[in-house]
Length: 126
Image (tube, rainbow, N blue to C red; front, top):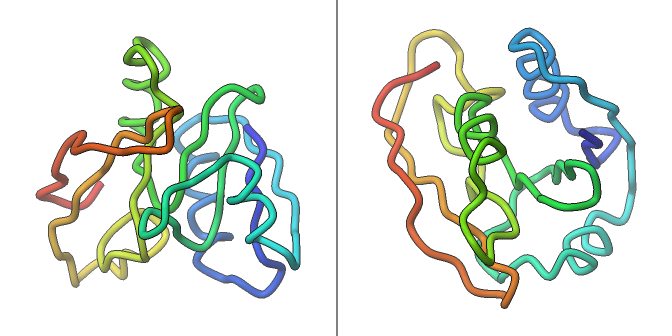
């Protein structure tokens, strides 16, 4: 999986390290123009975060998506799916968890037609 990130973003580095600890193969690529990456994949407004992961040029994982949901998605991608998104940078999500503070957050299913819908809610830290 290729992870596009801004070179000065530290939570992106933490998320990449987390994915590697969970056994995922990650190739980080620093980019100054993250809008170009998000535009290339037609990510809907409001569904973006600080980094964009691309799996085999087929699927996108935007933001701090937990590894278990990436794996679950890749095992059985829903028809018409582009990937998953955790918009913003939720407190307690992988790469944003300090070991103490956690707030539940939503993962959205990104669709190839540019739309999105609810996928699941994360109620506890990884």
